[in-house]
Image (cartoon, rainbow, N blue to C red; front, side, top):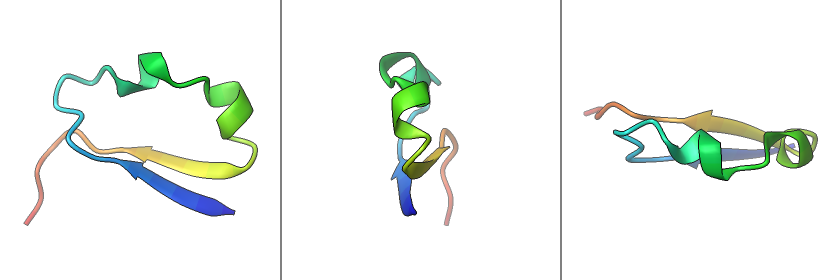
Length: 37
């Protein structure tokens, strides 16, 4: 399974532009909206 991280989603809108039903079968998606060090 492919792991994908969507970075810099500070407005929390990236999930609205992704068709999760099609992608989530083959990918492990993670949306990151806060900064990290």
